[in-house]
Image (cartoon, rainbow, N blue to C red; front, side, top):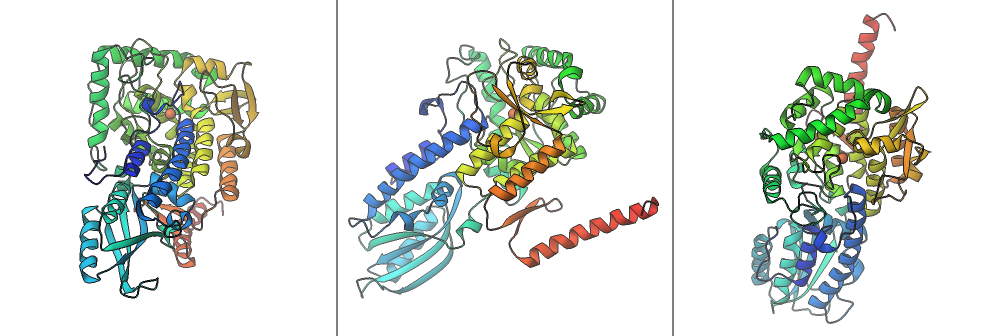
Length: 511
Ligand SMILES: [Fe+2]
């Protein structure tokens, strides 16, 4: 939780409400079943509301005259979104002060106490209306929780009679996003509080022992950092029975309802890591399995994450995974993500190279995207990775994890009750989502390759960024391709790989 300092403002509280407890039952989240799409939509709504109130708060805080701080000077369009959704902001602040050195020292100290990192300082005689005052410009990185404490502190300082927050011209590129895989330690914002402690409809609501156990397992995620081995869980007999109930049911439908990729990997999982109905696999073992197959890895998550954080992880081939098991009274339904869904539904598909590539591309597309685009990408994720269908020898098969880990919905999805639409990203990205029952509509891809190809084209045409990103698997870093030199460097790397392939083809006599 964020601390409320003594000088915390109402805006601080709104930020906290939006970030820490948003999308929760106490915020009036209406959905029965939590999903990335709903959370992205709700996040977007909260951000818009927050934007309005923050601008009003800040205007009231500093400026008796409206023109001192203009809305557009404060936070421009996507930047307010960035302010709310990104842990660190890069921005410039101009202070109008009566004293130069004295104020400079005070401002430096205050920024430091608000955990800001100063990148650049400039001072000059004021060019506004008071020749005796100074303008001091600071360019800084500052955590979102520190920004409003900082503004509130200066409000009470008589020597500083105006503050202007302006965007850094390079902000679009420099806004915070995870650049190295270890930065995912900061991408763990829980947005769903649809937990047994809070919701009377949760199957575990009246089971104190279950709630305690779930909390204990979920807490592992809070102390996990990049590079740690994932703690192993000693699952209880109840939990093992729940896993077995779901596993056995899905196995019954394996040949008739599940796609070839899932069936093939399930066999490999059985041979290599002893994947079976009798034992709940450990995250660490499956993570190591995935690293060998596709370079994906798992990291523990305490619940449903914000769409932005969850999708960002995919860019690094990291899948954030819950470790607790749903309540034993409802083995075939969980209102929140749990290990049965993640391990049985997601892991086998992430071990398929084509699907792993598609998942990573969904993640890369989300980096630096606007709220509106995040909502679209989350919807595409929902109708593909979670509830996607594909064709196989003229028949429908499931490849979405929400289907592969749910007997009831798997039967429904392949029946003639729902509508089956051909997968077209532009239609899929804005498709209304059914959250009260099984889906009414499923999107059918010709093949997984076709799905990936169409998505790629959609990203090219629809996601507007002044730069592109490339994942360097050697350094596990997202590199910004914003100059011809950088593109040239990546091209060189790809050329070396192509040379090796050419050489291999020559050896095989096929070239
Ligand atoms: Fe899922």
